[in-house]
Figure 1 (cartoon, helix red, strand yellow):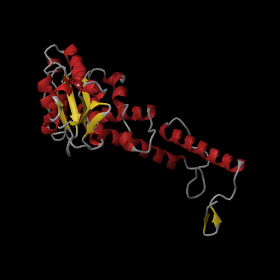
Figure 2 (figure 1 turned 90 degrees about the horizontal axis):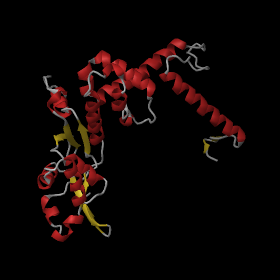
Figure 3 (figure 1 turned 120 degrees about the vertical axis):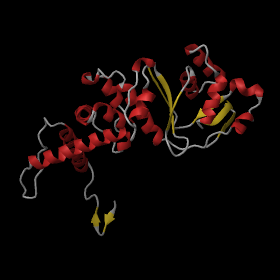
Length: 284
């Protein structure tokens, strides 16, 4: 039992306390549901300073919460916001908030399902590339908040004995994300991010495979050559260089392993390697 200046923090125990705690949890759940659903009435027991029920005050609070979540989505998906305009985005985001309210108090995690929601949002169907642009922006957010790690230098990688290279397994930076699209999403993103002057791009020019990572202070988005995305995703599952290269070759018979490895080293996304379970080395 904990006492605070002579007052017991929990003056009772047992079933009565359990019922009180359970009742409070139920009231919290009702309150949370009412906040995000305008069809629901204000929870009973809410009163204003005068002691009277206050539906209007609750409506103001409800609107502020929803607007705050919409602003969170605008900050996380600035290019999507720019592409569709503020009014369209606000309506789409409001519907998303109603469909998928936050499950965590950490707002950095909110909006992970927004790209999938956009893909099923019929009014946005004419912008066929929009869900993939959203996936790219979500990868940017995840990369920005990922753990840091020091990249492996070419000299460190050259220390691997030649006989061990076929079994070599590369460890990629924790921030590394791969986004593949049938549309030129990297070009679309570049034309609409920040203060960029919006231009035009032919969406029929082919798709982009992108590497999104934050090896240093800033998140970088790089186009990948054909086959490289499959190679890198295979590495992330734990495959060796040789087995991962086979995945790249399945997609593109012209997959260039040496060129891809050079690009990965230049992008500073290799942070370690494993030779065998008993012999591993990771650059943290």
